[in-house]
Each structure stands twice: as structure tokens, then as C-alpha cells.
Amino acid sequence: MTVVGPFGLTVRDQALEADVQAGLAAVEEGLFEATKSDVPFITGAAQHLVRAGGKRFRPLLVMLGAQFGDPHAPGVVPSAVVVELTHLATLYHDDVMDEADVRRGVPSANVNWTNSVAVLTGDFLFARASQTLADLGPEAVRIQAEAFERLVTGQIMETAGPGEGRDPVQHYLDVIAGKTGSLIAVAGRFGALMSGADESAVSILTQYGERVGTAFQLADDVLDIASDSHESGKTPGTDLREGIPTLPVLHLRRRAASAEGTAEDRALCELLDGDLTDDARHAEALAGLRAHPALEQARRDTVRYADEARETLRPLPDCAAKAALSELCDAVVHRAS
Image (cartoon, rainbow, N blue to C red):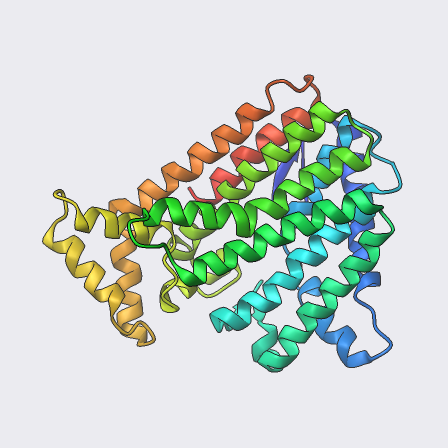
């Protein structure tokens, strides 16, 4: 029984463990190679978050998906590098938009340098991902382009907010499916596709990736409220401070507006509507949400999406990789526990 990678997936099959570990090591080498530049300053900025580490959740999913074909096929590792580079690029941009101070336990790029450097570094990573992607063929380019459109659309939808009459919770879940689920779906799809797995496996792993990706983001929402910075690698309540309505907050607001809403619910909503750049008010809001049933409701939603992801795996043949993908659902839920 071995823990694979910082995400904490336990693999019970030695052959699978060896393949996954070797694949992730090759991806790590690929990430450093892809972020090198002839300009040392660019190399330092581009490798800032690579060196900070991370869960490498998307490359892990590529490696597991590849087990349903030839895991050593030449396109498997490069496709994992593409997905992780794309993810890293979005983090640089997200930190500028959110005015974040910490990412993965280190100062965010916008704090380390400037907003302009962070945005341009993200663009540099997108460019390097595109270069690698071009070698994987037009189908891979199309898949990535469609996912990137969904990712950006999700970000825009989040910025614009729900339209009049639109349920904010459902709007948010649609945002998450675009912003996070789309790229994680590509990770499962690339793993199966690049390994030569059959069309059924490609479709199943794409659907699995979208659902487990949504669960993964919802777990992050819970962590933003419930964890300390040591556990999450970023400042607790970052989304809260910036007024970004994550799922626990949306559940609180729905409850406060309903017939079941209490004076305490409405008071907490008023606190959230105030100036949370004030440290004392921010701490009070965090404490209130940590004690509120809305947080537990968000945890239940996380479990539901993880269970749906596990259910999509049912038609796949029983094997060590299928068991690991199922356990990955448990690992995602455990983060929110």
C-alpha cells in the first residue's frame, strides 16, 4: 500500500504504482523543461509555481486513464504536461483577479513581482502548452481548445453573476463545471485517448473527470472556509475576503432568504456583505460560517458529485486502475471532511 504523490492517493498494486510514479516523474521533468526560457527572469517567474509543488491532480488522472490502453504510449506524458501547464497558467491569472497573496504556501506571483508580470507569465505558459499540444495532433488541439473555451466561459459567468431569476446555486455549479471540471475532464480524456483506449473508455473517463473535477473544486470551497493556511497552502477565506460567493456562502444566503431562515442567518449575511478587508470582521465571518449548517451542506454536495464520478466508472473492466480512480473519489471527499 503506497501513497502516490502529494494528493495522497493510495495504490495497492505494485505495477500500477510503478507506472504512475514513473509517469508523474516524467511529467515533472517535462514541466521544468517547458518552463525554461532564454531569459532567466522569465524562467524564474514561469517556474515559480512549478517549484512550489502542488497536488498534480490532473497529471495523476492522465496516468490512471492511460492504464486502459498503453500507459507507455508516446503521447501520454506530453498530454499530462499540457494539462498541468494550462492549469498553472490559470493560477497566475486567478491570483491577479483575486488579488491573492499566497499560492501553494509561497507568495503569489503578483505579490512576488507585479500583476503585469503574473499575467504575462500565465500567457507564456499558455504558449508553451500550445507548442507541446501541436505535436499531439489536430484532435488534441481541438479537445483542448473546446475545454479552454469552457474554462474561460465559466470564469466570465462567475464574474457576471447569475441572471435575473437564475438560481445562484445552480449558476455556481455551472461555473465550476466550466472553470474546473472541463480541464480535469480533458485529463481523463487525454489519458485514455493518448494510450489508445477504446472509445467507450475515453467517454467514461471524460465524464468521470468532469464529475470528480467538480467535487474537487467544491472540496476547495469547503477548505477555503474550514482549513488553516497550513492545510490549504493559501490564506483561509481568500474567496470570502474578495466577495466571491462559493458554495457554503450561497447555501447560507438561500437559507437566510427562505421561510426557515433565522435572525442569525440574516445577521451573518449582513456581515458577509460588509467590508471583509477588515481582519476582525473577516475572522468573525469565517468563524460564523465554520459553525453554520451551510458548510455541512456544501460537504454533502461534494460527496454527491464524488459518488456520481465513482458511478460512471461502473462499465469499465475491473482492474487496479479502476480501483484507484474510485479511491480518488474518496481522497477528494476526505479533503473536505
